[in-house]
Length: 286
Image (cartoon, rainbow, N blue to C red):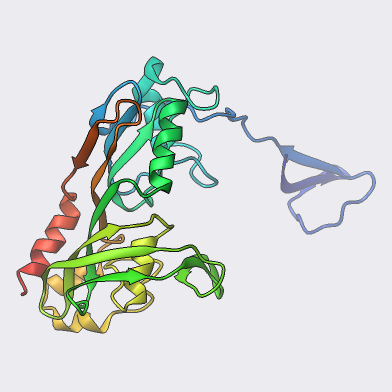
């Protein structure tokens, strides 16, 4: 029950919720509407790249939350998948719901795979855990990493100073490796990079790139101040980069073996328009 703070005493309604509860006081309560215990189907358009009876591969747009959670109970990818799959969804754990094998942050776009059966989920999860797959991302970062290609290795765990962030840590972290390669740059101001993952940790690319001093453009968590490299960009490209509303990160390619047939599968999707518009503007400054 939700206590709105309104109470009736001696026929007078008051909204002072700070009052102590006293004998004889009548409180006016508002009950919230009941909600279904399980995610419900919602007709949300999906960009499906591949689908069969065991799995589904899609291109997730930026802004779409993957799984229901506090603050995002509906309008998620899971809600959309339940509606899209309909009766073809055998379900996980006896429920008609998709198996989320891996996640992308809300504001990261790109290729994702979801399991439609318990067996497919089990085998895909094992492949991800064993790193028996290919994952390549495109990212726009501030500055120019040196060398132009390299391997970032550093355990990732909760930032001891700010628990809502992840960080490269020396204790209580998980092994993480990111391989990067510069594809193009805007002088020394910014770079378009390809990142290939050997592991899959929370915020891995965002954390690793920030750790080497090249945070992603638009990152609301790991870009903590206005980057000095922005001064090297001409207008209006500088404003376009500084005002980019999300982390400039796109999951471009995923490759894995089909969990049932063993067939090698590989799927790619180009970055969305906002990403390519910024990338083109930056590379024109080279």
